[in-house]
Image (cartoon, rainbow, N blue to C red; front, side, top):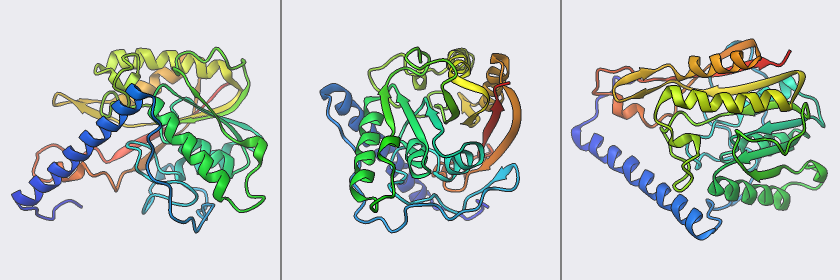
Length: 294
């Protein structure tokens, strides 16, 4: 799949682009936190489609030819999963009017899909940058959606909080958890929030802290309902870190019961170019753990 050759100049150019863009993103996050300024990507010029036309997946291996771009979805927020993931999970495990929770809001993908599918939603993130992006997109949905498309009372509710402390949410008040936490510190989503999970480098420490998140999710989720978590493995200092299995263990230890383990294939990962001339295998999969509160 990755056997096409690249010259040293092409590799250098690609590395420079990715490095430069990561620095730009870092500066945007810093300015947003330092000045309290809402900095978000430009709005879409036009929206042609408002819903996915995809059928539900039929196996435990999920692959998407390209990222969904309907409604306000776009991939400028690094690390956010494609809208096909929450779209399928929300349609599969909830009914209209149910409440969906995403404790790692990021670019807002889950709450956007919840609103489009006539579900209520709550999005939580420690990053003010993530909050500003999501709020801007929600406002864009309100302004551009066809008349009668969105239920006003189902407008997503957004909070800037730590996912380890959801005390403001009532016990057994949520019908679905659908989320994607950071993959250790592969991407640092904040600059001045040391409690942010994306600042943790050690896998064991990260999972201990995620365990606190899992306990909160177990508390707020209704009995018999689903907690869906997308997570991927990673490498740290040349060592493979089976982060997916470690997070799955935290979910089960908390009390969730396994329902399905989905393998999601990655096709558009820009990091693949770095692996072409290396001996290491590229990590080209992620897990979606579907667990249930008994």
